Image (cartoon, rainbow over all chains, first blue to last red; front, side, top):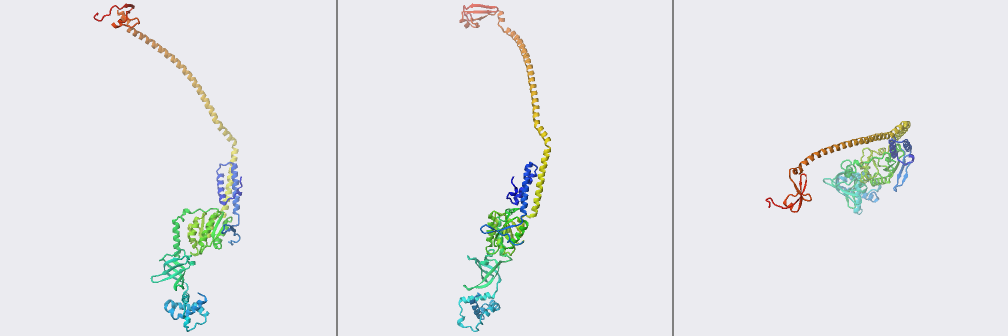
Length: 79
Length: 479
C-alpha cells in the first residue's frame, strides 16, 4: 500500500480523493481489508493536508525576466 | 528660454514694449505687459543692469531669431498654463509621436501641438470636430514665427470624455468578438498551490495581496512579476507579464491589478494589449484594478473581477479555518465508516453457522428437487410402458375378432355370389336343349366362318360333349 502522505498532491487533489474514499467506505459494499486500506489512505491524506495548512510562512518569489525566480521572503514588508 | 541670451533679449523687448509690439497686440499685449512686469520682469530686470533710457539705433536692430525669441518669451511670460475650449480640426499624429491640430471656434483658430509624452497618454486620438478642452501654454514657434498652444492635457467635452469614449470603443469591439461573454469565465481553482501576481512590486496592491494570502492560506506559493502599472508602455509591460506568467505552467491562478488612482492612472488596464493578454491567458485571471467603483476593460475580460487587490487575494484562496474544520469532519466520517465496516464483519462472523446451513440448504435444494423429478419421471415412464403393453394386447384381440368377422362376412358373401353365378351359368340353358359348339381349344364357334377353319368340333350339351365333323356350310337360306 502506498502512503498517502508521500504522494505529491495539492490540497485540492487530496480533498477530492478523500471524498472518493468516504463515498466508497460509506457504501457498505467493501470487504474489511479494503475498508482498512482506504481508511489508512484517508488518514494519510488528512495528516498531509493538516501539515500543509499549518505551514506558517508564505513563500513569495519574484519572477525574473529569464523565467527564474528569486525569493522575496523577508523583504515583502510587514502586513 | 531661460538662458542668458533670452534674458538679454527680453530686456531689449521690454524696452521696446512701450512702442511697437504691445501697441499692435492690444488687449492681450497690455495685460501681458502687466503680468510680465510683475512676474518675470522683476527678476530679470534685477539680474540686469538698468536698461538705457534712450536706445542706440544700431543696437536696436534685431535678427529675426532674436525677435521671435523675444516674442516667445513675452508670450510665455504673459500666461501661465490655461484652459481653452474649442473644436478639434486637422488632427495629425506624426511619426515622431507628436500631435498637431488646430483648435477653433466660429471665428478664430489657433495652432496646437501636443508633444509625444503627453500625446501617448491620450486613450485615443480625438476626432476632428470633437468639442474639447485643452490645458496648455501659449507660445511662439520661433522657426515659423507662428503662435501656438503647447497642449499638456486634452479632454473631450464632459468629465473623462475621451477616456469614456475610448473605453466604450474597445469594450464594444471585445464584446463583438465574444471576449466578454459570461460563458468564457472559468471557475477559479479551489485550492491553488501557486498564485501569480502581476502588479507593481513597489505598490500598495502587492502588499495588500500578500497580507491577505499570509492570513488565509500561508501554505501558498506566490510568484510576483513586476510591471509598471501606469505611464507610457505600462500596458505592454502588464501584457507581457501576464503572458509570461500564463506560460510558466506552475501558476494555478493569476491576479492582475493595481491600487487606486485617477482614470488616467488606471488607463493601462483599459488598453487592448492587456485585454488580449488576459483573455488569452491559459490560467484563470482575477482582475483587481483601483477601488470598488473603478471598472476597467481588464476587469471585464478577466474570469473574475475583484473590487480591490485585497478582495482578489480573498477570492483566489480558501480560508484556512473552514478547511481545518472540513478535514476534522472528514476524519470523523472516515472513522465511523471504518467502524461500520468492522461491525458488518462481526455480524457476518456471528451469523456464519446459520448462513452456512442456509447456504448448504440452498445448494442441496435443487439437487433434491432433481432427484424427485427423476423419480417421478421414472415412475411415469414405467407406467407408460405397462399401459402400452396392455393396450397392445387389447389391440391384438380386437384385430383377431375383426378378422374373424371379416372372414365370416366374406364366406356369406361368397355363398350369395355362388347363387348368382349359378343363375348366369349356360348350364341351365343347355339343360333346356341348347348345345354350344367349341373347337379343339375350347373357343365357342358362333358363325359360319368359325366352322370354315376346323374339321372337327365338339358340342357341349348339358351332361357332356359330343364329337362332330363339319359336312357342309350354308347360309340362312340353305345355300
